[in-house]
Amino acid sequence: MSIAEAYNNWANTYNEVPNKTRDLEARAIRKSLENGGFEHSLELGCGTGKNTFWLAEHSKNLTALDFSEKMLEKAKQLDPENKINFQQTDLNKTWPVPGENFDLISCSLVLEHIKNLDFIFAEANRTLKKNGSFYLCELHPFKQYLGSKARFETKDGTKELEVYLHHVSDYIGAAEKSGFRLKKINEWFDKDQKEIPRLISFIFKK
Image 1 (spheres, one colour):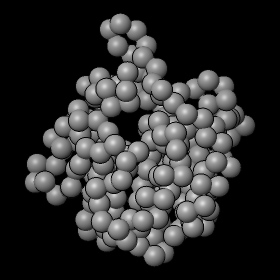
Image 2 (spheres, rainbow, N blue to C red; image 1 turned 135 degrees about the vertical axis):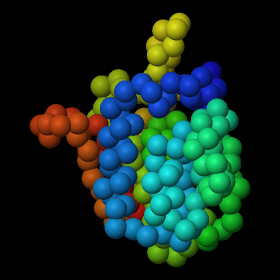
Image 3 (cartoon, one colour; image 1 turned 90 degrees about the vertical axis):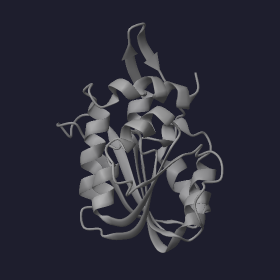
C-alpha cells in the first residue's frame, strides 16, 4: 500500500482517534513558531489540517501540500471561503510552487515517509526566500530504534505504514548540504523527561 493510499484509508478516523504523536506535535509547532508572523507560508504534509488553520492565522498567505486526496478533502471542509491554497502533491517530485517565494516552510510528521532527505532540503532551499525558516518535527529516532512507526486501526486490524529511519545527523547533514544553518533543535516528551523523547524538532535558516 502506498503512503497516499494508506492516508486515504486513515482519513475518516484520523481526527477522532487519540494519537499522542499527532497531539504532541500540534503543541510543538505552536510553541516553536508562536512569535512568528509570516508573509507567505508553505506547509508540507498538511493532512486533515491539524496545524493548517493555526498556520493560516499567522500567515498572510498559506499553501498546503499533501500526498492524500482524502486527507485534503477533510481539510478543505474546514476552509469554506477557500483562503488556503490546497494542492495534492507527491513531495518526492518538484513541488508545484514558485522559487524564493516563502518565508516559512513547515513539515510535521512527514519525513519518516520520505527516503531521500536531500531532495526535500533542496526543494526547501529553492522555494524559501533568503533568511527564510524551515521548521520540521518528526518522530524521534530514539522511538524508531524501539520499533515505533505510524500506524492506525481498521476493522481488519492494525495497519503499519512504510517508514524510513533518519538519524539526527541525517537531518543536519542534509540541511547543511543544501545551504541551511541550524537555528534551533528541541526534543519533546510526553510527560516525564527521564523517558525517551517522542519527537524532535528543528528550525533551519536559509
